[in-house]
Length: 357
Ligand code: NAD
Image (tube, rainbow, N blue to C red; front, side, top):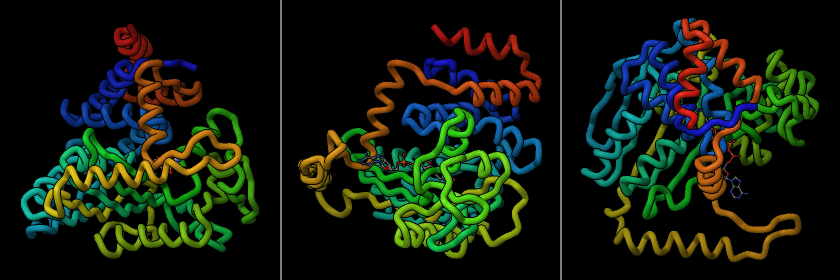
């Protein structure tokens, strides 16, 4: 299992994205996003997505260097159709526009439609928080076979529909909740399958609707489903993500015909917190909430009470220092995907090796 420094993985991803047709800046954005997802501990949304992106490109379901369609630009409301553009760039550019609007007007509602996979939603929350904006996002996943079984369902009807909320702190988000509304993200079942390990209890059902720990049916045969987190309440949040992103924001829905792509739509709100009060006082109160929550005695089996976003910060510190492990199957699949783009084994190894030291 190779363990690689972040810049080696970034150089490799950049090469692959360039060979997929992205201009320099887009390739750099995709590489930065994917490797930062690995750093945060979310291998499900890191470089392991490359083979999927290569397949989407081949099938005409991902469009490099796309120009988004600005459907509505009306003060505090922006509606942008990404037209299957590279999500890492489409979503970041849309959120940057929304940040500028929030700074001007106090807040902005952003409806982003039909972007190819936008990856780790927390990336956009970090962008907003670093500019002093509180961020919320309801996101759906469409154009793909359904993977999430909602409460009481024996078969899937939704995507993994992530939800994200963050508040700014001195260096990026002070607290950031960033999660799939399934018990685990689909990519985590893929990572478990690739590693040949089971998934935890309560995450998956099989084709008959019974609980299972084996990710093989779900990943290999597309049977069964990921379960919604948090019984009927988490399932309700997944339904609201679908409604906000498709019915309200106007993106493609899980109810539409799927072509086998991965389309994300997002209804996001950005609030410049300095318009609500003194940012230093708000930051102090955020810290007070964190400290209060963390002051609780840990339950049996736990060492510490954490707030959302802390695990990712810790992962990032460790992986920046020790490197990022990529499992053998993922590495083999990335190599195979690179080969289909005409990247020889020598060029692949040379790109990784030259950035290894
Ligand atoms: P996760 O379950 O690892 O973490 C979810 C949240 O819980 C995070 O905010 C994390 O900080 C927090 N958390 C984790 N452990 C904690 C602890 N011990 N104490 C306190 N808080 C804790 O994440 P996930 O649901 O597997 O999602 C992974 C990533 O997948 C996210 O970045 C998400 O945006 C992304 N995603 C993207 C899509 C898409 O279509 N683009 C779909 C689904 C998920």
